[in-house]
Length: 375
Image 1 (cartoon, helix red, strand yellow):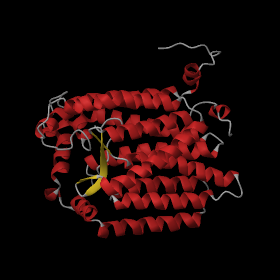
Image 2 (tube, one colour; image 1 turned 60 degrees about the vertical axis):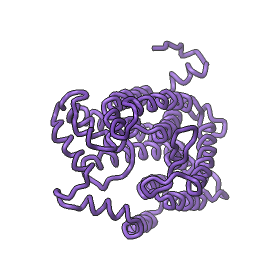
Image 3 (cartoon, one colour; image 1 turned 30 degrees about the vertical axis):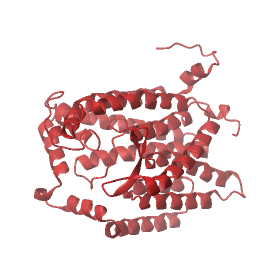
Image 4 (cartoon, helix red, strand yellow; image 1 turned 180 degrees about the vertical axis):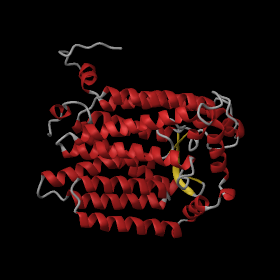
């Protein structure tokens, strides 16, 4: 471990004394757990699709150093740089999403991916962390400047982003983004009447999504089906939890992963359950909860609205994505193609999560205001 003097004013030394180390450790632990589970889950999937056993492992280990490097780099930045990064990132993401709608690859009826240098990129993964910070900046501007229409701009930006997501279509991401944006708006001082109005609109939107999008209807019907009519992957996932019991069958000894096509992505929590049992599953849940709760605790103690809204939004987004993935594996909600942050295989998801966590660590650093000339 590096040892720095508190009198050292260098960038790295300043970062070391101001970054929240428990958050840093917890984020690192998730990466280690993810690497172990990718080693176990991906060879069977690779064999099924006819590629080398280490195909997914090699690709993931290309992205892991980049992702954690991005987390560290972003966590060293001040609030001004984080805002600029989010704005530029959001604009680039929107451009790529439009490009994806026009020339993207269609997979399972959705146009969400583009191919760059042999890798498939899902731009919509990056819209979540960048939009959260941009929305926080707009809400904060509404409070700071009387003539700045931050709330109106945020509403327009949200509607525009939501429209692009639904055109892909990506209903799951749309729901997550809507929930986080509504949470931020509430913290920013949304009148209670508008809370109920937005809640009603949200419920009505869910009903509409069920009738408009066939894949949403199919997943809901599968979720509501009797035990004998479960979807193939959910049935195998539940079998993995049953096999694993408390302590699991042992590292690499799981068999259900041989039969789940998405064992290395959407259902990697099932692999953890079968091979390492309830012990590892609860450990993963505790780590996710600790990251979210600690981030919320740090942010809500601050009197800077931008810090409160951006950190709370990023933490809530991270936690909600985790809950959706794990709940889908346990058949507690309809399945949604959403990865388990820092654990599932996936370059776009890993880098997007790293972007969000890097900004979160930067925003929650001690005395971050002093480094921000705009504050």
